[in-house]
Length: 356
Ligand code: IPM
Ligand code: MG
Image 1 (cartoon, rainbow, N blue to C red):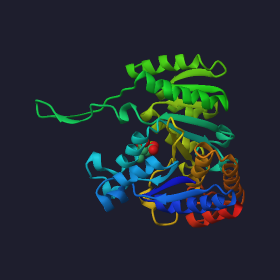
Image 2 (image 1 turned 30 degrees about the vertical axis):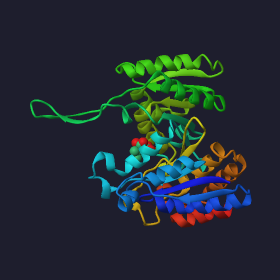
Image 3 (image 1 turned 45 degrees about the vertical axis):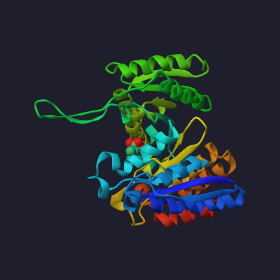
Image 4 (image 1 turned 120 degrees about the horizontal axis):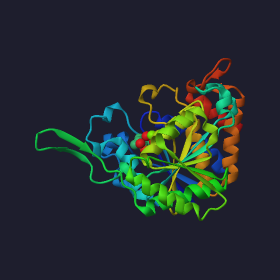
């Protein structure tokens, strides 16, 4: 038996997770996967129930799970809390505690959705890029950090952008291994014209590349990468970058595909244990209205089966089912276009279940 920890979280998290669970339950039965799901609290809902965004009980269950499926965390209700007790700390805390350093964010354009992209169809048609974001280091976790008062009474905020050689090597190796299984090109994104930490990043990427002679390495400054992603995104295969640049570029890349509501992600540690979540956030503005797109979470289930549970066959079936409902013309509001059938969250989930 394999244990799956389900963390619905906040905002649209619970409603998209409900649909993903329907899909997971069906493939669990059909392929006799022997998965046992258990739910726990994280983020704002955990704050409301226990006073902490990452209760010890949740962390304990996360450590024991073979894989974790997460909805989304955060919302205006908790925005005024101290930084250490905000919902986001629940998410960041699990990433750090489990060592989930490797964040895979694929941006794949479903041909059926070419018209939903804000870019012209010819620029995005066939798009298939993979952003590999370092997830447990960099400026997100660097010390010291805080807000201090200077001698003149003025306050000053500060964070530390730091990466060790081993952290860079580890994410670089993962990116190259993934590139070997696809287009065999890695573009490392940095700001080596200004920031020393990324001068080291670039140097280590060059070193890692020597072990992967079949993969071609290039480098790009992050500002240029942001521009190239909307100018000619198909030039990329695998993009590897640090935590903050990856956060920003992955949202940008998501939009190329029409909607961030379509994109799953995986966060892996060195043991292959993983947390799987949609790239979108908790979208408090549409929470509870049945407007959310559950496909990113459903596709996260597929990634979970493939990467953490060695179950590629059911993953293929889920991905094919998603493609099929798009072929049927079913669309949630975020991907709606002329002539398509607008459906709510639950109807989209049910349609995927039927297409399985
Ligand atoms: C993401 C999110 C998180 C991040 C937030 C919610 C802490 O934006 O997963 O990209 O910045 O990593
Ligand atoms: Mg983000």
